[in-house]
Amino acid sequence: MKSVLQAFDLHGRIALITGSSAGIGLALARGLAGAGATVVLNGRDEGRLERAARALRNEGADVHAVAFDVTSGEAATAAVSRIEREIGAIDILVNNAGMQRRAPLQDFPEAHWHELMRTNVDSVFVVGQAVARHMIARRRGKIINICSVQSELGRPNIAPYTASKGAVKMLTKGMAIDWGQYGIQVNGLGPGYFKTELTQALVEDEQFTQWLIGRTPSRRWGDVEDLVGAAVFLASDASGFVNGHILYVDGGVTATL
Image 1 (cartoon, rainbow, N blue to C red):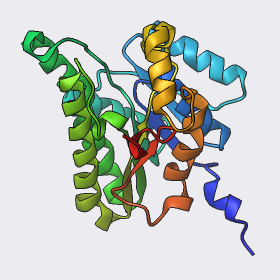
Image 2: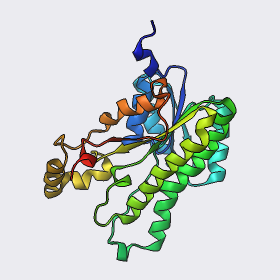
Image 3: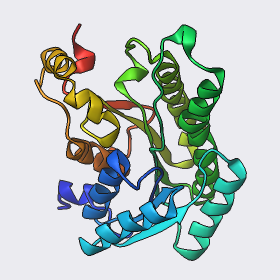
Image 4: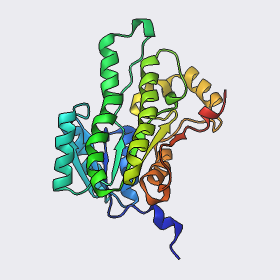
């Protein structure tokens, strides 16, 4: 009898994780590598990317680093073709690249709106499309789009970010609808509030941290390692009939007022 744990095994799979030189992206790459996958890191800063790759290699991971601009369709198509040609078929794509801008909506600069949308939404479309074209030909593949609790809930001064993550949620569903017939599962992973370098100021804000812990049923900030199990599930055969779903890993924030 086949062990259920074998369904989570990623040996022999190649995973491309965008925005993976630090933070959640790097944690997900480390987790997928720990489940057996060969991981391809992505970012724009080649030096930072290579340092992240070297750290994973020192931990025993099979890792490659490919720098390209995820907001450019031309760059994404060329990079994906290179990965497919030189490293191997991409079995798993994690669209993780993203950014945050904070300001009252009436003061939010239009240039920042377009920058945020290019990074958070356009990248999911252009990289997803570039990878899916190869997956469609093979009639298999896993795509995980990083959503957020802000795909469901708003907070002051981040309306554009909330709009972008709501768009990623619905793009995920649209991808699943169009590409499910080709054996591709497309799902979202929605982190809550996690300790990363991007949230360090909030972590150090005692008033905000007290509010968040009181608001979160699990009564703590998330650690990036908390996302790994969900990511491995969505990347593996264990989620073979899960499609168009957003899995929130948020300590229960979306469950309570």
